[in-house]
Amino acid sequence: CVESLRMQTRDNLERMVVIKAFIAVRVLGLRQGGISEETQNDSCEKILTPTEWKLLWVKLEGKPLPSQAPTLKWACLKLAKLGRWHDSKRTGCPGWVVMWDGWFRLQDMVEGYLVMKSLDQEI
Image 1 (cartoon, rainbow, N blue to C red):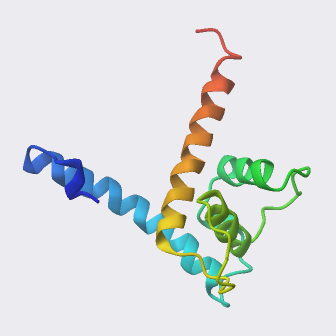
Image 2 (cartoon, one colour; image 1 turned 180 degrees about the horizontal axis):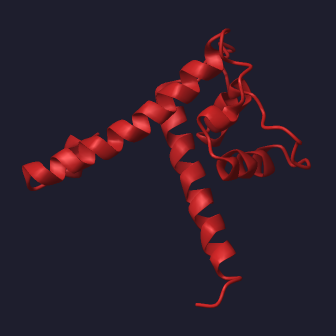
Image 3 (cartoon, rainbow, N blue to C red; image 1 turned 45 degrees about the vertical axis):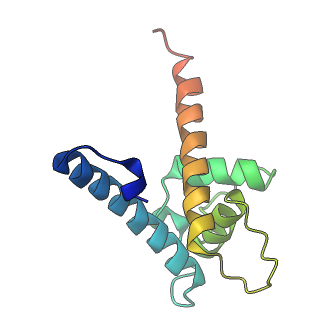
């Protein structure tokens, strides 16, 4: 993954490893929190920002926002669905690739939301 970016210098490679590691830790927290019986009922705001989970809700639920943040299990499954996971094997446990893809799709949604929100302000 990092090797495919073909960083030309050691400093660039180190910076990219730090960025990728930060993202990997957040995805790890979401996936493990969503499948662990001890933490699956905790609030998804432990991992996602309010903007992130609200955009995920609006995109995948199509219902009005709840008064409280959904659970980590909900966030894990919905992020996986955003990464094109369909639970075809009926394991209920999404893989790392779909979690990673879902995470990046969510970040694209957040970026688009913030750009649209900035249009309301004078530039």
